[in-house]
Image (cartoon, rainbow, N blue to C red; front, side, top):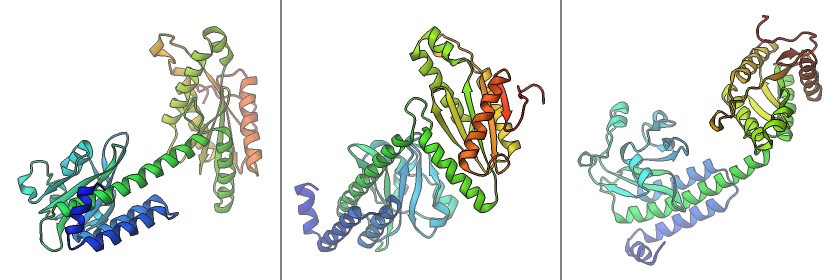
Length: 359
């Protein structure tokens, strides 16, 4: 908060309430709470101090730029929660894109205001104040206040207070995402972007225990790339690494949100399929096998490499009674596929290979 802002806040009759609010927010930020609860508490303080009839906190998707209603207090709160606003759309979208705060006394006179939400939910917005949630010039979302309870226009005092509070929220979000990135780095394979071996086997143990508890099934697929050593020997390790990264990307496009893909090591990969029976796991393995076989790798560099994979499939409780046994069963099935000629899928306990044609 700069000196000018501080003097203007002190001259307002709400000065003491504002200082108490900011102190309360500072205590909230220092507490060991998750980010969702911190944002809820910050917005509760906004509501108490500035008395909007409705307010919302929208978070920005880092990839698409869309805004999503994350925290909403309004007569239509339940309908708005989770609704997404296209990038740059409406006042909130404009603020997120430009990183600048705005006060609009009469939204009907501002071409940036989008009427769709009001029309969809039978709500009437008259005035609003909107500020970006940002830290170090990176915008994470916006806070939007709509229609003062006191039927007054939002003023510069409201904007200064709201901007200060938004800065607190921006710091909280930035810190939370930095911690999340660090946690993700610990469990992620740098080369492929998939999970690493330690994490995936912890998850196998967790899913097997869950399957025991709820009498469900869980499957595991192991695969490695056939004659991958030839790629390294012929084209070098940089090309081999690039191919592994492309295989990792291909795996990510074929798994469900509940599934987990990992690089076990070298050119070996693992896919964990919760609540999936043997038939579902075999179907998945067949599809991924054919996808790898038909893919042209390193096309951007002009290499146009082709490669195949050998797959092993095992399912709890059909093939194993523990997580370790499930890992061994899938791994053994993969090596059986290699012994039977490579380039196919073998299920645990089987002495035949499914090459994708004989079925």
